[in-house]
Image (cartoon, rainbow, N blue to C red; front, side, top):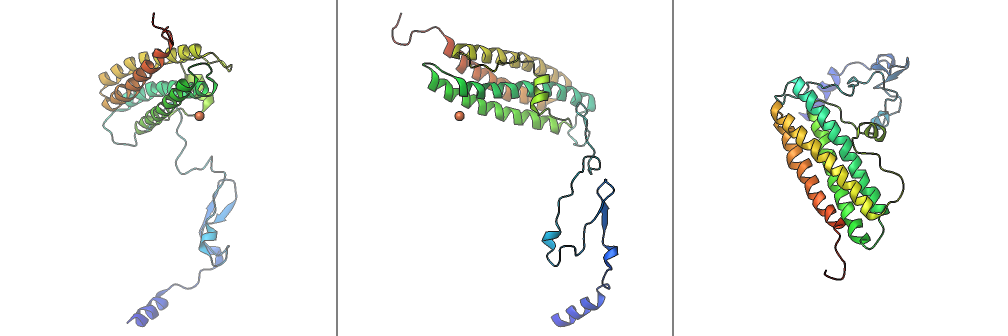
Length: 234
Ligand SMILES: [Fe+2]
């Protein structure tokens, strides 16, 4: 039975293809490449090659920053999603800035509270990094394009530029508290607007994640700049 099936299959198989009939695909630069064929001999794995220089002819066209696509059926109209994406990109740029400010201060902190602040700053860095991912992915779900690179973040961020110098711990803390305050004021504003527009997912993200995390971090950081004697009660 098996032998018979094999024989039939062999008979039904088409005649050997001439090499010229192998599928050919243009890479957009006037060059053509065979996508099947025997160029690499009998091992098909070797035929898998990256197709380079695809900036112009990528299968999915480039989506311009600031636009929203209606690809995902999430029950929100385009104006609502566009507005939410704009607000979230502001929060994203500020969160990336705050995240990086925490790492800068983690490296550069000095003084009697070095160990505490060194660890606390890194913990807050990790938490801000989680927020960055949540906000960016919400932007993509809404059909937008998330701001990502340092030069764009610097352009969009509403947090004042942080100097390159190593600063004293109380100045670090003041800077962080100011940045948190900016984030939180924006969060209150954006949460209200998202709620009014009916974008509950964005409202929830801003309140439950961004706002709660930033408020908690403000508490832990602010208590370090209370003027309290280290060894003697007043
Ligand atoms: Fe570290």
